[in-house]
Image (tube, rainbow, N blue to C red; front, side, top):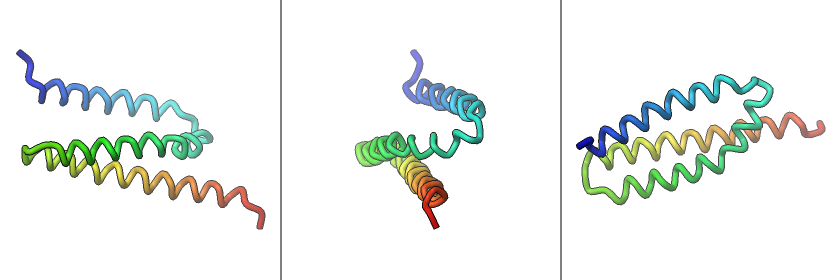
Length: 93
């Protein structure tokens, strides 16, 4: 029987390859609006990471959940910074 850890690892590695392929196909002109639109998804991911980190009793799961919270927070903050910069470009001087 396949362990839950191996299935999770498989999904994680597969998502890395799929994400890389999707992002590499986005034209540079659409990258900034696309990033601003995905901030809501990153926020949902952040909430899921907080739940995963707080729900588990295993030290490894807590560590991985904390790492997911850190990465999700960096993604959300960076996305909002890019969106703010993009919106400032369109304001009249």
